[in-house]
Image (cartoon, rainbow, N blue to C red; front, side, top):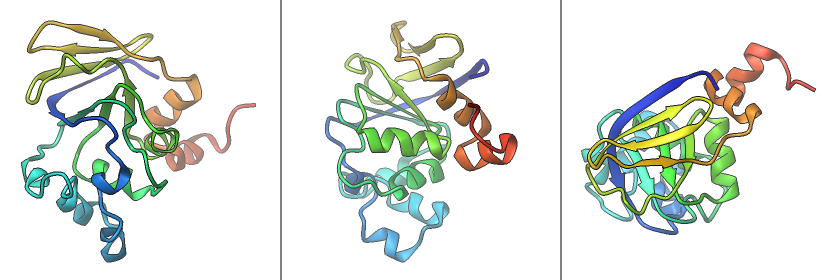
Length: 169
């Protein structure tokens, strides 16, 4: 992944945030438009949450973020809200892959020292680092495999295929 940086406000959630908490499955019957779905982000946890999201916010969670069903719309709603990264202690495998495929950066690191509203900076380079600007803490994050970093750099899997035509062999 080319050197880049994301800075934003931490929006902290807990463990086991399933895809129906991210966007309830009934909403995908209404629309698949990210601009519409963003209005319902985390409504099962807090009906007012979506109205407080600002572009650039970073979702911070505990263990097993994105568990539950494999619905891709759970990533679409997050991206539609202007969120470019989710930082969690761990992800469900399916959500992690859907995030990469749709250009949402999944960052695995210890999030226990991050609090609601903390200012964060995510550095994506040789190492993936999360800086808590509010506390001065720096957390080493799990490194992305090269192909995933390349897919994210392209903006997602479809953009990657448009740019490269195929995966390198």
